[in-house]
Length: 219
Image (cartoon, rainbow, N blue to C red; front, side):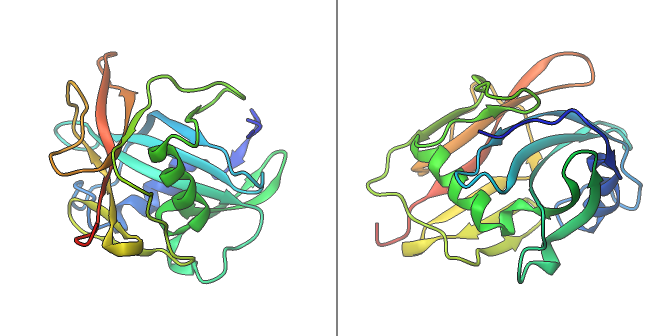
């Protein structure tokens, strides 16, 4: 169980993301500086209790219309070997000290727990409350035997999102740009999915598919 510390972060997560998001190919803000707010998301527990895992929805209000992005993050007490390219930044935690924040798609702990969530072996947790399930997160899995991720995830970013290559040719795609849908159901051909919710600037609550699992061609 992850313990949520209500303390200071310097710089804050949103300050780190303000510098990092414009470097991503799926960022739609052009040359503008993001104006970010945390709009929602959820957490997952690391079974070893070492790595913080958060799926944050950050909304950018810098353009003509707000855009909400899915940003999976991991927080570590030491650098992750071989993941320098995935470092979002470092920050000083008021309780835990220096923390390294990573794009979680490159962190094997997050990938493993996301797959566990898809299969139903892990429970999504509230973003800011300790030991409280997030009932707005839904998932499904209709495959036969869940694929696994390599120790070093193979990650591809494009203009639409992020794709992770798994065993057996399976893929897990994260929708970085979130588009509300009712109901939030996976596309045809998917064998698994995760959907979540966030708040919009007008105060409404919306849902979308966050991640989609597809089986390999030989499955």
